[in-house]
Length: 257
Ligand code: BG6
Picture 1 (tube, rainbow, N blue to C red):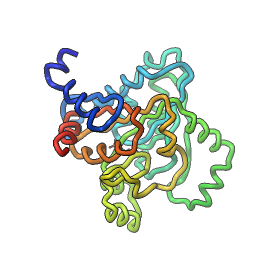
Picture 2: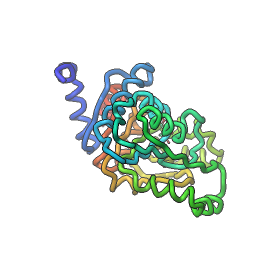
Picture 3: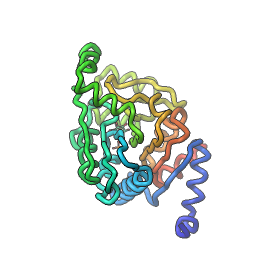
Picture 4: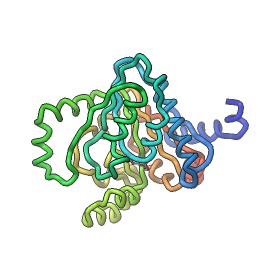
């Protein structure tokens, strides 16, 4: 704590909290764009915040991404001890690489904490009609209900164009994302600088509006390259969100206001 005051990190946390208008901000030193160690520290800080929220029998909805993958690695058996935690993916297929998919991250989180997990298999490129009928399948319906009633949501925030490229987004959608000047992305929703949603990846699971009645919402995202994304996302995100970020992102957000 003394170190954090001396290095000015606590001060930056207070400033960022005020700027974004949210409950709590945790900043790790460095910039995760530049170093994997910083990203691992971000994951560790996120795992510690999660640990502070864990209670017996809780359901945790998790998104995909490299930051969530780092978080999963930092969870421990001690954190889950005696708690029977259940991990579920926040949304269906978003076109990520296997190791960065929410299903896989949930499995790791469950393994690390001696908890359990459920998967949600929704193919990426299916029509709305097929999705609607999948939603009527009892096994899928059951997982979707667990997602909707999750106690904790933990998620990443991405830079819009980076995410659209990573997901091999269709040409016409890509044009829309660029044309509407999207800067941020979370849960498959793309946001412009004003925080308005400009595109939604059509899949099932958690919607942004579901975040507002959760006990805990934790967002983890760092790196200077995500400054605009983080800022735009928090224009419409719930105030109760706890943000775990790094100095690179924090300083850049505070600079351009
Ligand atoms: C995705 C999430 O899997 O990861 C997105 O669905 C999020 O909502 C993204 O923006 C962040 O990824 P990363 O690798 O930058 O942590």
